[in-house]
Image (cartoon, rainbow, N blue to C red):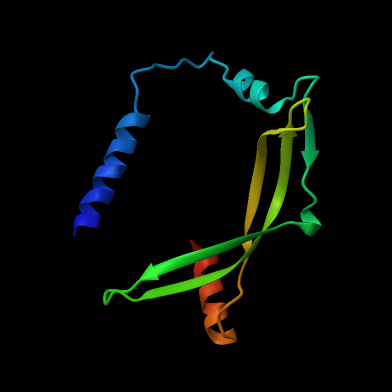
Length: 123
């Protein structure tokens, strides 16, 4: 019960923060903001992720009513990705898109595995 109240308050707080009193007009152009973030300066370098060699591991936990934890994990592939480095070669940012339809479970037997994957892909 406490978790439901906490979750409700968290969602309400997020909603209130996301609402502001700014008014927008049709002539506003916000495209310059994203362009400034994604275009590297001359001293920065953008590296593309090698999709054939890249995987994301995931794990999920379902807590049953009796308190037992049902833990599962698997892999999901990237659609695209890039890393942004500064002039010294330090990581300063990146963009990634995940292909959620490629999600697979790696720890369940075949019957349960296909049920879990079907569930995860339907969300």
